[in-house]
Length: 92
Image (cartoon, rainbow, N blue to C red; front, side, top):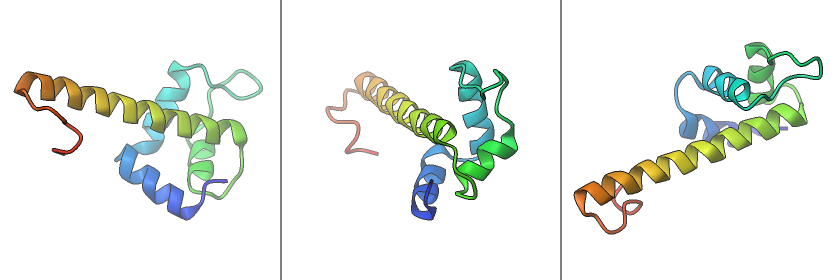
């Protein structure tokens, strides 16, 4: 189950419209419920906010956060290369 501390960290990392972003990620990566349908925003929200437990949704949320972190790091490196900065992570 996602704890309140984890939820705050995820919110800070993912940003606004976090449930929609997670739902889109699930659809793109074919993370569906046992009936083969997309998870409803309400189901994702309940798990994200720690009101409900669902290991598959939780794993998908963490996978999304990890992919988002990798994308942000890649983008920071790309921008740093353009600007000629040695270590982009320190400059954020």
